[in-house]
Amino acid sequence: MQYRRVGQSGLRISTLSLGSWVTYHNQVDIASAVEMLAAAYDAGVNFFDNAEVYAGGHSEEIMGAAMRQLGWPRLNYVVSSKYYWGLDRSGDAVNRKDTLNRKYLMQAVEGSLRRFGLDYLDLIYCHRSDPHTPIEETVRAMSDLITQGKALYWGTSEWSAAEIRAAWDIADRHGWHKPIVEQPQYHLFHRGRVEKEYARLYEDIGLGLTTWSPLASGLLTGKYRAGIPADSRGALENMAFLRDGLTDAAKNAAVGRLEPIAAELGATLAQLAIAWAARNPHVSSVITGASRLSQLRDNLGALAVMDRLTPEVMARIEEATGAQAA
Image 1 (tube, rainbow, N blue to C red):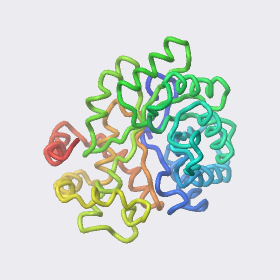
Image 2: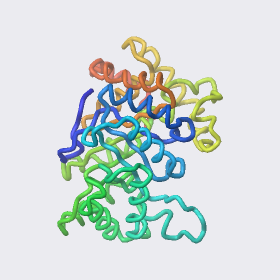
Image 3: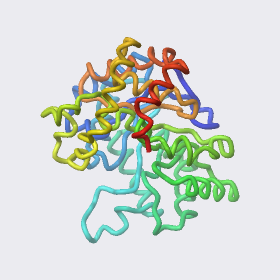
């Protein structure tokens, strides 16, 4: 396993990490989580990503229960969670959904700590930006959570470059804890934000990235080229919003053009796509997901593929997918 610093911090996380979106509670129970977390940890993975909203809080409970069973030393792993949507979606829960106000953030992190069974989280993220809360209030609340010892570092997820820079500048001006990392979607068909919009932030403020969906929700595995398999993510009722993208004819044709490239490298399509994302030097970690052990092991095989992505191979990948990149 390779390890990279998160931005300019001293925190080092595995180049490939394991996340719980979609899978935990929906497809993965505690026993399966124990099995996969153990396999990932044995392969050198030390970063495990979650979010308050995943499976309505059950994802944090399952991951926390699995970690307690495994009994790892707390210093040996990094765990994160994200906040914005909240757990209570009722009409009167105005301070518990779609917000980053101080009241919500303070209580939301406490809830995560209870569900995980942890004293602190290593990384906490603002899961989206909140146009209705002054950004200074959000930045101060996140900084205070670190000062209180409930988290060690904080960052953002799917924020614009302007919003990230504004948050960093506010923290810098007041001497508060600054955001060190952004968690954006990044894969062969979704590249503009990481490669263009954030370009200045890497040098100017030392922004780190923990990227999600390296397989474009499974599209880049090739399994959706003939439709939606019954046992796939796209077949889940709560994932119905993904289906149009997964069956996009032009993107599936591009995936077909990647197949011979992967075959020549002795890799699966998934390994090629994950290795491509991890090859970006600004990416601290690529968050992978898995619903079964064989899938996890296949994904981790991407590490061996990274060194095979020569400039010539990268050019071929660009030619195969460039027209569909956004």
